[in-house]
Length: 264
Image 1: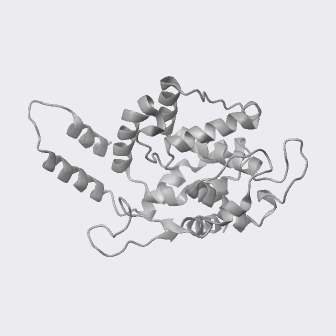
Image 2: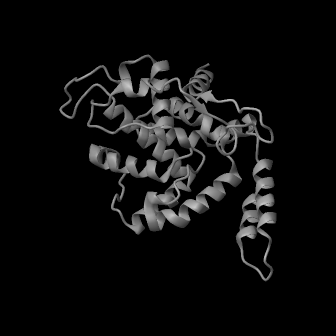
Image 3: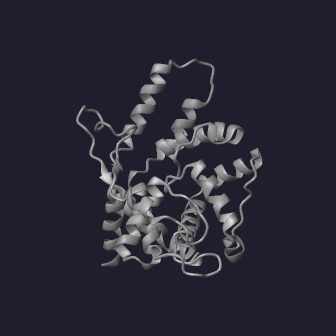
């Protein structure tokens, strides 16, 4: 893409030494040119990929509409240029140092290497790998980390990671334990709006991966209404180009709004 070509040109050594100030100004200009997020652009991207995404999610026995709703805010905020920069920084250190290096959220679905690493380990312990024929190398090696970071740079794998996340979430926060004995009123027993709210909260704020049927829903409810999601670059403290405070949103509210739109 044009933006990637420009960024590559910036980082490619040549005979002349470019002033750092000029590089920073150019990078800032390119980043700002990719903002603010455009809803129409995000909607078109989703529409163009919906068929293949839904097939992947159905194969993992998760609701395609729910999965789409969960990542809607991330697709809306996505920036091609920022993603290229952060992916480059991630790759430069993660393969060598693991999560002690850069740990930026990357890709359309904004997945961190540390998130993918924990998810893969939980998946391999859950017994779901053989059921869905999705396997991960969870060794702490450069080879495994290199494969993981490359997967995160592919849209197909971002989609699959989300499906794996949802399937695992409904197992660990569900009603049944490993022996199929009911141990709690799990995630699947809630109203669909509550399910979307807690699932999106887990995706945005993180969750634990206990054994089947032992996920603590109260931990998710504690953050279900947090207003910590913003559409600005950086920390999101201020609006771009001003000292006016940037608006922050409840991630789960945005997901429920999109889910309801899909169900109309």
